[in-house]
Image (cartoon, rainbow, N blue to C red):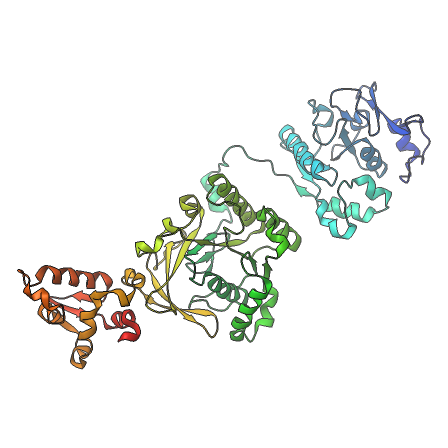
Length: 541
């Protein structure tokens, strides 16, 4: 048996050396740990940093564990850590074959009120601690099981891969040991089935519907998809929304719940982002009062080589301790390698849900439309890249289109409203007006016929007759007309047809009604909607 204090800088007490019957092999120059069972018999000898000659995995030190008080048991990774922790008066245990192993016989460690797992600071330790925690929780479901979180002191102690509790003891950092120990996290076993409760449990719970952050568009703990084709100012829109959420100002005439915002910008460089925000912040003279609420990440060259952006997002949230806010990802496809692959998409959505739940955040994902979607002359969920798996997963979806009527006019449509409350704008398109001087949007009225915003006015011969009609002041004062009034402004050859142009005239009137620029009245009369017509004709009126 070795003498007390002859184990490097650990300063073992005589009691610790005696209790463990520690030995030293001068030839191999390593500590020797006798593996003593509960009955006091030596099962095998374990040479430090050598393979275990005993074969099967067993608990260590069994002959001491059986005499512990049944309150707290610290489970560490390896015999050296066990000896050093015991020397600090912890009730300690380990297994004899490494971080990934769990003894088949759990009886030597049964009966404790709490089990604390403290494995090494490395990948093997992280995985092994969860494996051990799961085994202990399954064996003793009435006991509390916790895992220490090394990251709580990662910056303070400048942790390196492979650090263990013995390193802290060797460096005399009892303060760090106490801090990590006190901030352990309770292990929650992974449920294999559904959690089932009775009705009274639900009615007495604190469960509440998620509150709107921006009514109709963004909700607490929700995932929103915002999509459109190229050139629809999606990035400008989410920047406008982000500034209003961070400041608590109204957005599109809706009251906003102020929240911290983290913008993950995968398309613009820092310079491009600064250029846009410089323009927008002119409308926010108080921006210094809320600048702490607006965090951003602009992708740099080295980041573009990083394949799994979502893993990096997880690390970012851990390092910044961002929570209870809004994360905007612009855009979903730049953050992911191949969104069209269903397995990749489902993996990303699993990450999104995990991040929302763990950090209590809402997430806005910017998406794109598939090619050719404008030909449908409408906005609907099936146009979004990612399809039903993506839109079914989302809490709500809204889409944007650049109107052909004006370069400053856009169409917004909520194509999947939130479930928790009624939405008066459910699949009702409405106008958005672009304000170039401030880089922001204003909300306008609802749109009766969305198809007209997909038309090119200069190419539509159908508009020539009504364009001629509205040149008359008397007609502008009372824009009611009948079939003959319209026929007088149509092509002369229509009158020469056998039916006098009746069929062509009927189709033209139906088109006007579908576009929302005319409404059928009684007695074969129609009324033009001048507001819609002027907007459709634009500068030509």
